[in-house]
Image (cartoon, rainbow, N blue to C red; front, side, top):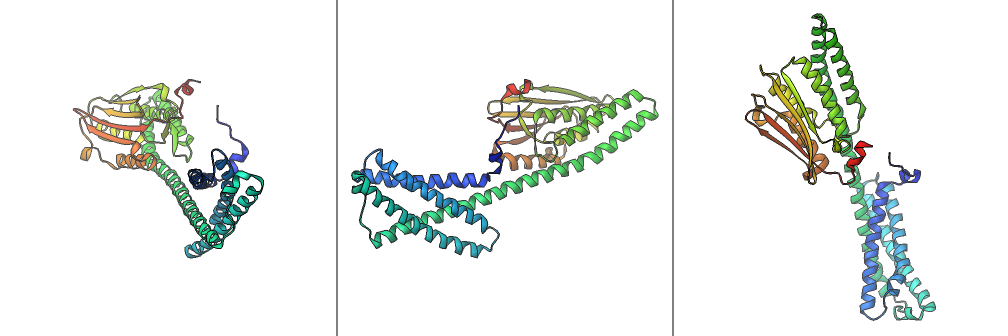
Length: 362
């Protein structure tokens, strides 16, 4: 069942949620540290000191929210203008937060005798020193907000690049594959093998439907990837007329595990180009999936006689490795190895913690 989300959750900028968490942690740590110093210095006691600091922390987080809003508004301005304006605002907010602190402690001292130990009569030197500390903290807030914004921009750029890469992959795959398939269908029709031609046309339509189903999203499910590969390999098996033997050994509990779209296609094409096409004997291509601890293993193995050039470092495999690094960093890998005979290409993906294998059978 698809996950339901409230309408308000879609309206909240994820960057704002990140900024709010950062501001809350930063100011909570600062005020908690001040409370600990008060307790150690004998000016307060647990838990009153922490409760007394809570409204001040809330006020500081509120000002930090206003600072974040201003940071977003100034994003399109020149860098120097942004820095100058934010610096001035941090000075003002530092003084304002100090005034809030001193006023709050004064009022608290009037209503709570215990708080009189904390209250100190107003002094300009103390006001300036506290304002400086708060100004520095707001500057740190602004720097963290900027870092969050840059991180989100990088994620959006990566998503756009993945979508563009996926579209480019389709443009590379379909014309060449369609040309070969349509040529094979034409040959079958000319030789009177109408049933085989009809089956190839149906599998071709299924393959094209699979390639279009994922849209521009760079993520898919393992089942969708295997369906695409199955349709592709059946067409190739008919085209190579007995020279291709296909074997699937897949853990069906991994059907709904998230997988990068078309991540297996270059591995299969590698086997077609270097193992099946140049061979005069039947070649077996095996596709295997399994889970090993915290990893999901995807394998394409063939027993062809001709190894890929340079140990399998063709452009397709290079692109697969680059996509894995862009999406998962060091948590995923592509391993290639020449066999005797044949070639092995193995992808290792991190196990998705939020994925429930039981959902594959619901």
